[in-house]
Length: 384
Image (cartoon, rainbow, N blue to C red; front, side):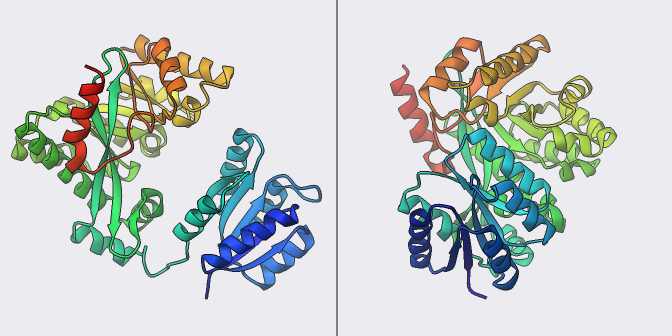
């Protein structure tokens, strides 16, 4: 079946604009401003993609999402609005928790190029991101880490990198993790995927050491990686074989992942610390048992989630939350790292709050390992 896009928007001119861009991207398109017609088209036309305007007079976007969830819609859904970004994000979470495939949000006003890029990236290429294709990618070395720098806010020196997984596909180009990591977890391939990333990161640290670069690297662990009692031994043996000190590696675990099997997580994460690895609690503040996890598990770094960080320059509430997290980390003798820093204003706000380190587009985008030495030299020359 070809890609079919159904758009519901109460502004006919804007819906027409979306239609023209989408048709140029190879989509069949239907547009409507009527909730009744939308429901009929959704049932009869079976769209593969849907764009929903969140604010409409007859039925708002939340009502539309409720309807689609009731219909068990499998369409890829974009939420579009010029409304407050926090409300849009709340609607996105609502749709996801109702089982819908919310692939992104679109902020009005929207340029044709931006919309085209989003639509091109979300064609329904079912033959590309499959379980067998993922396994083949792991076997063929198409899964690789890109490295995003972390910078110390006291010295303005780089203090390490986070290894962010990417799939370098021959036809699709670089595929982001949200399009294949959930499938790896669901299909039981997450151990192989994490092993591939960890092995490359350890090898890369060894290579950087030979160039005189003493790099710290953070590697993400899925909650499903925390089922293997020999995980600490395997990772320790990997480091010893490469001549890489365990202290050069931080494993990042989300609080949600740590809650999946609390006793087993406590066992495995404690052994990782005993072996000399560092541990960070990632996306802090987005789960339900944050303080419990900080008390129970041997973390040495707290990563503040980007949804709070990115609002620091315009939201008093966000600033209070971030400052509280920084103080909490310091009181527990942990370092505080803010992720998702995208503007200079936020960067300086965090520095004033005493945050220890930051990462985000304001500093650098994730990069191929080959360009890291060049980036380090450029950063050093700018901040000498």
